[in-house]
Image (cartoon, rainbow, N blue to C red; front, side, top):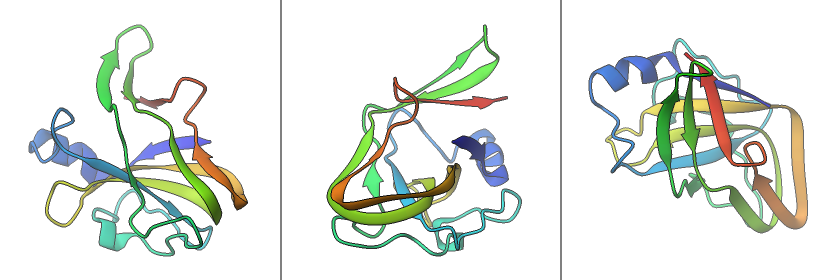
Length: 139
């Protein structure tokens, strides 16, 4: 699984659009028909081909216990959150897209490329970002 930031997110941080201490961020699942574009996709409405199926609600789920910190020993921005699960679901997804639910037009943050389709069939579809739930993005 690889993680990427959308280009507009970096600019939005400097414009104080996002507040990791108070905003609510969501993760939504997308099929392999979605083609992420780090340079032109800026808002949730730019994301196409959201996954669907029993146990999945359009728009995805809120990320909980979210923290954000720079790790000087690895030179990475580490965004940590609780793992996300869609229980009793039938879903096929290739991407997980994070966006800011608290801000008008829902600006995008980043996405995960699973490298292949992942599926659940009347089972739990879990987004376990490393064993400890850590997203590490080089800066």
